[in-house]
Length: 217
Image (cartoon, rainbow, N blue to C red; front, side, top):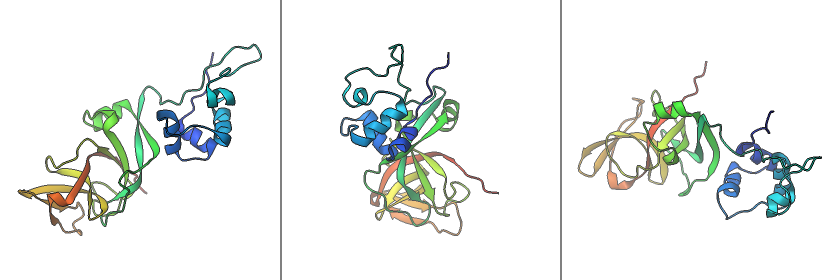
């Protein structure tokens, strides 16, 4: 017997005409609750009673025989894992202004096998995804790539590509140590010269692990 279809957070966001970030708050936190038209639309999308979804009272869902049916889960397929896609983007060139606490605007799902191979054993809970913009890292990370970040890394550890804030803008570039307290910001594109800065001037938000690249023909 075929069970109910899986409903994703993106499905629920579309049904309620809200951002996926709002759905994440409904699911994971007590700060916002479903009410009004959102509760009605969410109940329709999930196939449950509006009263039960809003208050927890009454039957979850009834059929003509009175049997309760399970809620279609807001879940990822067990062979996949999902990572939060953050708002804004990291500049691979001029940089971009991003808030101190960027919201989750969507989710990126990948196979567990891909995550195992590409993310080098980093715990799934520590991975964030951000969109790269610009041409300075062309050949390593390209304009529009989704870049997977190890958010546990908050300081320079070794020469690598980092996501960092500098002069109020967020960048993704390679950092190379050149002396005590100083690093060189290196672009993959030779048209962008290297820049030497004080490490203390950079606010590191994570280390780049991998990227999804869109190849245009």
